[in-house]
Image 1 (cartoon, rainbow, N blue to C red):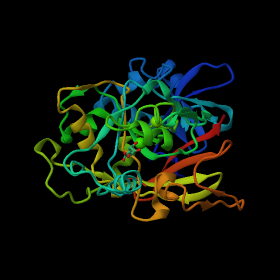
Image 2: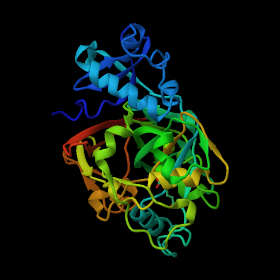
Image 3: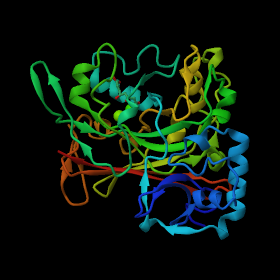
Length: 374
Ligand SMILES: O=C(O)/C=C/C(=O)CC(=O)CC(=O)O
Ligand SMILES: [Ca+2]
Ligand SMILES: [Mg+2]
């Protein structure tokens, strides 16, 4: 058993030295070339696998996703397998809209305490609806893309490079089938799969700009996603009952749908500094999609919505360095002996995750990594 055996089969877009982008699935430490398989008519997907992004495949819908996956499982031993060391991985889908939620009670409470110490941590609306904001799809980048330290207004009359560059460990849900007013029960008919997300955040720019309309330039400069899109079907073993919700949510947010038992890890220059537990998220991905579309707003193929920063109850489960170091006041020590409050130039952050597979043994979601440059 590996984290990437037949129970998993995450999709990616890869190229070899000829530069041609192709669709593949990961099996062990290799990628199976699905574009080649469809060209030779081993798999019939209406040309959806002979593309340079996953969007056409993602638009096909649940019955075809299931059929194609079953066919891949059947063919896997015979398909051409290219070692991962010989391929380059690309942004796997064309990102349509990008929305970011705020659904960890622990994260929202911590950030509230840090940014708004004069008020209760949670805002009064927080347990009534999954709060979110619309982000910038143009700057969603694939894992490994360097992240340039942004400049902005750090306070009144102060412009310069951020001094409080941070990460946010999140899980992203990728929409395949378009829709409006999507009920919580129809979640799996619309969502194709899951990626890991790092919603890089400049805390000084954010603290000055966000009132009253929310994050803007503090987060729009870069959002990194993992190259592997794990299909929802690989995650059925990770479905868990959602956390208890009080007060009872509005009708369109019920039934709540499932929580997901994903175990995240955050490495800072190779030192594991945190292990955020996704199962503790308050609002479920089904509730987030229902909320996003309840007013008649549409979602399209390629829409990405992220969970919000995943933080647990303890410091070692924080999904952001803002929380981990309590706004830089309690630095963490890395394995090389150095200490950090926020990110320095040259620092690398890698967010990984595993989930129980269909038989309970873990599968991998891969990782999203990025290095800060000037
Ligand atoms: O509490 C605030 O003012 C803002 C917190 C965040 O940085 C919001 C965010 O990106 C949502 C999240 O990741 O949970
Ligand atoms: Ca975020
Ligand atoms: Mg971002």
